[in-house]
Length: 446
Ligand SMILES: [Zn+2]
Image (cartoon, rainbow, N blue to C red):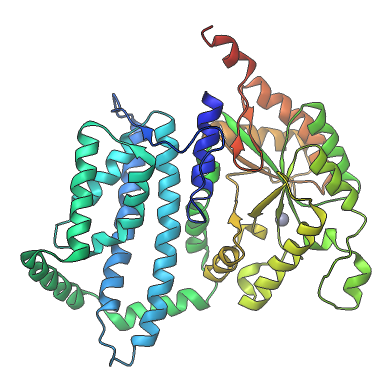
């Protein structure tokens, strides 16, 4: 049952936004939420963070309102429409990330995060039209969660408010909305806003912004159930080290996620001619076949491992699409094909995210960096990963199947994690699946 729950949760959330996918094992059914008994310290921190994410969404909503209200005669209107599009894209991504977080908490029996988001939304005065920025989030919440008691009542109130804002049925509300908009127009400097938006689109993000963007997209790592780890290997395949990694994983019956570089898949001769990559696959194709047969999953890590934010949008697309073409040729249709993308260095900007979205790929980052690319000691790599995993409680571990030290660290790491009771998640073609440990199976009644 546990396995099924997690499986369904991931299936539902993973594809949210692409298509409404239901779980194969049971039809989509809202998740029943009970009241949380107590609120821990960790939950309090969670609440502060969730509140600020909701505020950020509302802030974007205010900006959108003011931009939409510009008259069509205003010469800044075309720029404003462009800005509105990128704001909306950000809102959608953020809503999806929030839903994932709520969904994972709900599966863990925690209603508090959901309560926090509902309260934050209900705290918005009725006439504040920016509440509509929360609509995608609230709609998804309504579909995914079966709410009871006061949570149910709050959701109903919220839906009513959103409806009223949407259809403007009440004259009184309309007048107040106009007043509210006027006050926003006084506060928000449209020129500054447009300038910020155009800088955001053009320039690579600074380190702080990039870190924030990366954090916002690390949800898959943080949404793993507790004491669960997903091993991922980047930059391969490598003719010597990848086979060694595969052998260790096979010995421990662990399935992992491999993010491969296009240039390791392509036939080298073809590249000398400077042609676009067509069909020829290099000698590493055998390794890909082995991975597929062993049940590992394979994702896209760009063609040549550049800092993508430094490239033009056209070049970014080329890096992603060429590798996807090679992967489609190398990986037969089935569970190993993932439609997942990992940005080299985790380096992101709006262009990179737009390109990923356009290719219908999903960004998968990590929350634990083994630093096997920099650390020559297998022991210290193992210590680092164990320490960081224990701190985070779960996670996606970043390693590289192109370094000898990784092949030495991996057997030790797996033993250390098993000893500490970690379970190893894998991608089954539709969702992240977490096997039940023998311990858990033994404790089951009956
Ligand atoms: Zn890499």
